[in-house]
Image 1: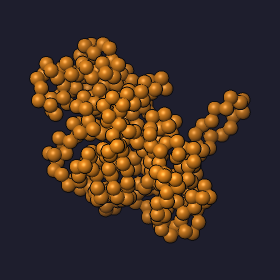
Image 2 (image 1 turned 60 degrees about the horizontal axis):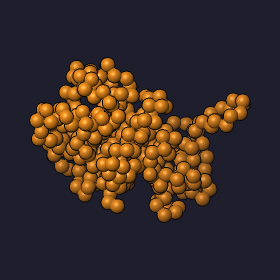
Image 3 (image 1 turned 180 degrees about the horizontal axis):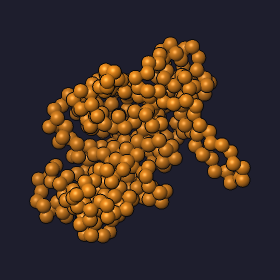
Image 4 (image 1 turned 30 degrees about the horizontal axis):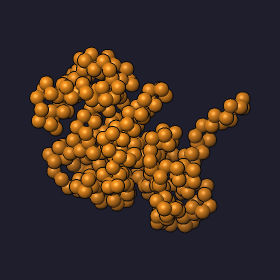
Length: 325
């Protein structure tokens, strides 16, 4: 199996009033053809910034400092021109965002927006682009495509808008699909339908998927492998079953422990929370950045970043005391 996305030793700094602020630190990720990698962590962990680094849609624009390597099907994306990157976006890599209402243009119909994307990357007539748009809507189980392409975004439900976003993202058959919290604003029944569509696209088109979420329940449902991110660092990675059943980093264990339990009993236990907050990126913390919140932290944790340790084949953890977890 070949890797579609290969991120190696990626670091990112963004400009601020205080100068350049480090956001990502030595990030290493790989997504294989037809596979789904889940990137999980609290808000502020750097998940979305990793996606924006891949697509070069960073808030700092050209002032952002990127170091390391991002390869898409073997092609190095760091350093290529803005024009070349515009050709890559939409054709080779597409993105589904958390809130489709803010991503779809409110003054254009769904059909116009879909056809514009198709004609930007493919040399087809407007009529052929319309046929493809209808086919993509049908592919995401929208049966009344002729009616939907004439609608404006506000005329559709949240679930329907997210289906349209998936149809747009897949319209040029990208090699990599990035889904950034695509089910957060949806109810559980619609959420299940959206997850099914993403898995179906992955299977049929052999598309690699980088699935970003803070919801471990969703991650366990859809992902082949998981990378846990905290404060811009990958702290644990491996196949889904291994990471969720035998977590080796205190942060991963804390995330799993914070999940609500539905036991069927009538007792009302308090939800378990992780004490403290994700540190501000500009805050200097020597050693492991989770140490101030970690119950297992020792002096060694504050002296330097722990090297990767392979707990079992393909399961890595960055922790000074994984055996104690």
